[in-house]
Image (cartoon, rainbow, N blue to C red; front, side, top):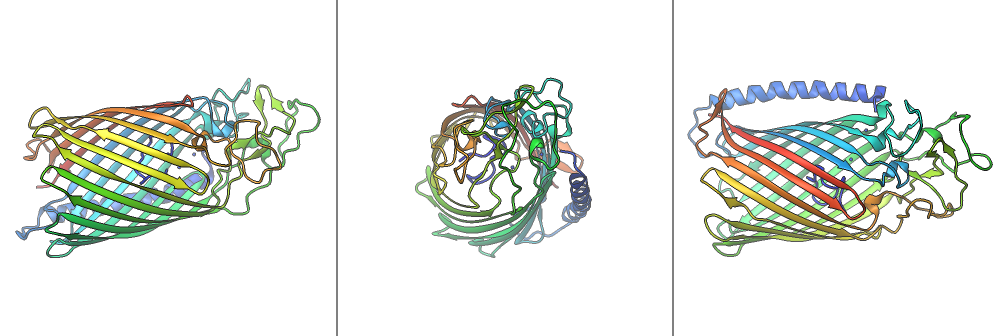
Length: 453
């Protein structure tokens, strides 16, 4: 299934929020770490630029990627308000990726980023904060409307002298107001048949910790004399016992050069999760409960309840065909299954078209379809006697279309200079995303790559 629709889909087929003291402390700590990392980056880059070695390296010189994306979405099925309400969201993400040759065979890559967003739906965790006439279709003015995520992801890779064996190890740390994640992993790649055949095995572990934030009306001591409805407001809510979420993934891929013009690849992933897989602030409304309101805002009967284990199995392949010197055809297909009842199909095509020696256009199209999870119910359809339920439309059945266009500037001679780095590539892309449940989004990404002397 998809995660946050289009945003930063970097996850291999898988799929993440309010000014609290915990947020300030965690972001401050991570900020100090990032500051030290940037100092180390400068030292490594300086050292590599003054390296006079003439031996053939896996990576000849340091490279820096500067990436920026802006994402905007809207819809009317917010999970925070039980499947009805605004889904308006904006997200701006900045990323720096530094690749540094440590010696002839080893490369250190450091990926750091910041993501800042504002969310109308998340603001309705506490719709009473700043609201005059409270409604699920408008954002409140409280601090829950915005958040900041910071992460760092270092990777160290080693290639054998014949370049037929590559191993890598990586780590990951991220923090946001109600979620902290730490991860680690590694990969092993073997090339055969004069490097025409490649097999890769990788694994990752993520050990995450929630700082649960619940809807305002479900918090201890809540009282408001504006509540209307028949009888007494009495939700069945109780706080989650578990506050951790662990994820384990194992990936196997096989790629083969089939001819001078054709290349194919197959992949299989196994992902197992356990712990708190529900989102603590996503409301649910039952069919067998009375409705209670403050103004136009309906108070929760409970928050979503989902199993504490999940198994995901995506597999698929890629096929790339070189038509001629101007056009390459890139195709992709993935089938996904999980034990929550979701199956999905993803198919995409990209046709890079070389306009000149330096400029390439990238028209793209992607189609996605999925079935609903066993535990998905629209608003006021689930019964309170059920063990599991959610009104998150990301777990509903829907189809989605994504259309995109990109343009890339590439200069292998890096004639343009910025300080001591040459500009190698500039990549600008735009994508429009439309989902059958009414969610629409667009994303703009800008990426640049610089190389050292």
